[in-house]
Image 1 (cartoon, rainbow, N blue to C red):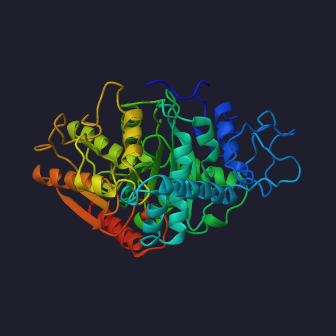
Image 2 (cartoon, one colour):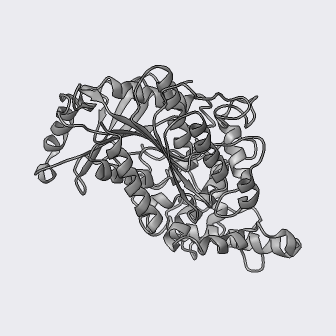
Image 3 (spheres, rainbow, N blue to C red):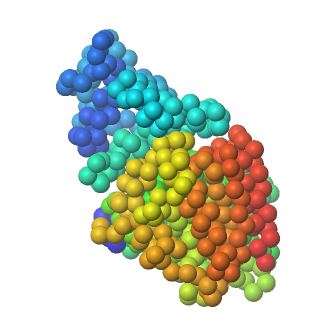
Length: 471
């Protein structure tokens, strides 16, 4: 797998001053036209399909970009109106426009198709989603759904520049917030692999001011001796179907901070390379590199014997990565204290009952999932590849391996829930310890916002799982 960074490795791996994402890159012309077309209102009586013209001076949306700089002036998204129209602010008004467009497309399909064929329409599915998730969750995941659809190209390529620009991210913050500080660290310069490290800060450290007061504690932490008390280390792999998001994405920064509060330990969030630019096995290689790096760090060891007490965790594609890294660790004799999988992404050629029943409902379609597997797997592989279907016809069983205990969290309204339940059953058949938490009325992403009982009860399950398996 080739490096995703063209610059030579940096001499210093600690990065405190840089924002989470570098200066926004100029999106491609295709991206500009796509986003610009969605930003302009349709002319009265039409859908606005004619070729728009550029407006002099580039794009300067009112209300700003959520703290991010606008694209450079050389990029000018097309705009039909000149000075009389105010551009929508990002992200709220753009999201509303995107949802309005989806709503209009749903009405068009309803008019063109028989009612019996409309069970999977956007309009019906949005109504179904609203009955089971809070409004904030519906807006959040609907936002992802719309933007993800914009970024996937039919030929299997991906609008990476636009994706990087649209992703809401936060910089690392060495100054503690609610008792948790974070910093970015290069763990494999050969491929530019970074991780964001979160830790709890006790005492009066939160009151420290000045650059030195923030930097020196981190340097001391990186060079510190093992802790005398047992300290859990959670290596986390973010979701995004192997193609989206990063360790600095806001929703995952928030989730990792919550994990620190729950575990009272350290979280290492891995910024693994993404598909389709970096196919199988790049994400697994990066996960393995992160585990080996953590194993070599004295400051992450703790307790009797000064050993690494590590847990692997991830959601969606991150849960898939956690599984495959855990298998390799078992093969090579590295002790993993537990795996925590949230809505882990698995698949297969033969459709399951839940895939047929929930296709197009509750935010996700099989077409979406198939696109991501095609983007990640080797070009000549199908969905029965072991990366996708670990216990399928081409997979391998884990009987006899010292595989870690697993906490498997399944949303009953995720179309791949049967895959996840089958994975849990496969581990049990091979003699491994599994704690299954099946939230039958939960949708994907319920663990990203603390606005449901599902969230709070699952966080308690995670905290208890870490406590019970730390020693």
